Amino acid sequence: MRVIVVGGGIVGASAAYHLTRRGVPTTLVEAERPGRATDAGAGIVFPWPLPGTDPAAHAFMMAAARHYPRLAAELAEDVGGPIGYTVVGGMTVGADETAVQRDLEALRALAARPGCGEVGEPEPLPVGEPARRFPALRPEYSGVAVGGTARVNGRLLRGTLLRAAEERALRFRAGAAELVGDGTRVTGVRVGGEVLPADAVVLAAGAWSAALLAPFGVRLPLRPVRGQIVHLALPGHSTGRWPVVRFAGRDHYLLAFPANLVVVGATREPEAGFDHRVTAGGLHRVLADALEVAPGLAEGTVLETRVGFRPASEDGLPILGVPANLPGVVVATGLGASGLTYGPYQGALAADLATGRPCEVDVAAFRPDR
Image 1: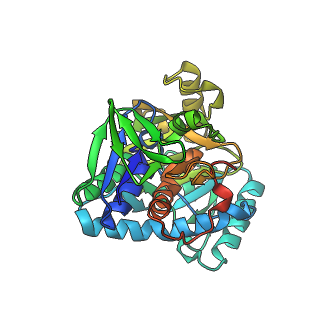
Image 2 (image 1 turned 90 degrees about the horizontal axis):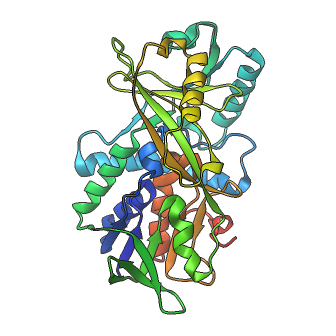
Image 3 (image 1 turned 120 degrees about the vertical axis):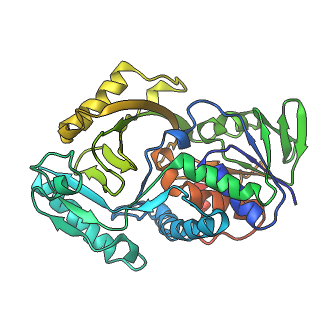
């Protein structure tokens, strides 16, 4: 059979990798639009479901947590060299002892669940210990550490997946895609005036997926959410082993990469649509939040601000499956700000669906026409 993957972000790259690994002739079509979420993702990987997670997402998240280390091992064997994924551990920190204690209890409950051993045993951190491990933080913070948290360089992982797929004869076509059908099903993709026939199409175009399905009367419960994140360099610091940092009761984060890079973020702007700009307000909000919790970043060099459109579903669940009235297309999107966490696994499931294989988890709740 022949499969076309539309979209070259982390989900599409993973789908192409898993398809070609099975020997399926695959073509990837990519429009290279500004704002691709993979390029602007921070890179926190904590896939395990915390208590209170929607039951429909629980099995998906657990399976995704098992999939990441397997995929990392496969890629290391396939291509060698760095793949962009590293387990560095993580911390939840704050000055509010009650909020920190709540996180400790939630993480202990998570670690005690069957299949969650890789999370690691939660470790209470006394006041001052978080700043010892991540020196830019306020010294008055206490926290909780878990060893299983990882970071991923989304651009590097995406490139590694595509390089491994290309070694197995993945074909590339640059340009904007248009789905083609015969009135009963999707039969291929039009690119630059040429129709590429396919037995199945994996639609992994992120926030742009809804527009590609609209001509067929399929409405995706999907919207773009603009996210602005800032990359800082910290001269004189070696940040390669610094842990991922979350803040108890707050919706922002810090994470570090070699050699002296710190990523801070992020805005969540559903009202922005596809407006691909760095805004004064967004930049101010990201930096003000970061400096409030990590004053040691004040002397950092601002390297760049990245802007991405996170494909957010209306109900917070992934979008994955074949529309009831439009066979021939597998839709894989809707991960919001968690694309780098769950995208590799969603791409693997999309490859299963495209080739008629049963998925290891029930994806009925993720139907694109739900």
